[in-house]
Image (cartoon, rainbow, N blue to C red):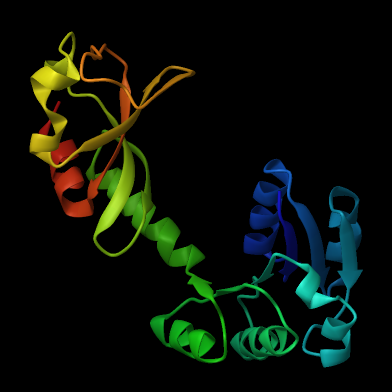
Amino acid sequence: MKSILLIGMGKFGQLLGENLLDMSDEVMIVDRDEDVINMLAPKYTEALIGNCMNIDTLQALDVPSFDVCVVAIGEDFQSSLEITSNLKDLGAKYVVSRADTDIQRKFLLRVGADEVVYPNRDIAEKVAVKLNAEKVYDYFELDSEYSIFEIAVPTKWFQKTILAVNPRAHGLNVLTIKRGSTVIPSPGADYIFEDGDHMVVFGNTEEIIKFANKTK
């Protein structure tokens, strides 16, 4: 469980906040829109109506006490930039800021952001991958080259062991098997694939997408 300061409760901020709550994190939310805060406040540990462009507002939040500070503002990049900088000046341990372009990312990193996320781009990439690989159910990009994917087991692998089909020969490192609601972590070489199995695999992004596209 982590303590999170979440600044900016637009659509992205609200979705992020809901996911953090699902993970049992302690989340304080801040937004200058009174109606939004009044609507969301009952769900969160703390909620504040305030403009974080005002340094006095940030100082009152005890920024160093949070494990992570998130600047989720999307509609006003100047505000995002200044708030990110001020959070670091006030001793924030780790700042995650939202960007919509590579230029924005560069400036956010320059003023002190520890991590920059691209919610719109990331969603678009995920949709594009799923549209082009029918057997891809989810994926998480680790860097520009490697990812973790959840993909369907090819039909021709049914009733065969991991040793027999040798996934590594196809660039797949099998981490977990999902069979319905059952999760089988670190399956052994003698594991037998069955109809309906999904594999959670790690490897080169392009190789895994090619594998998912060419297999049935």
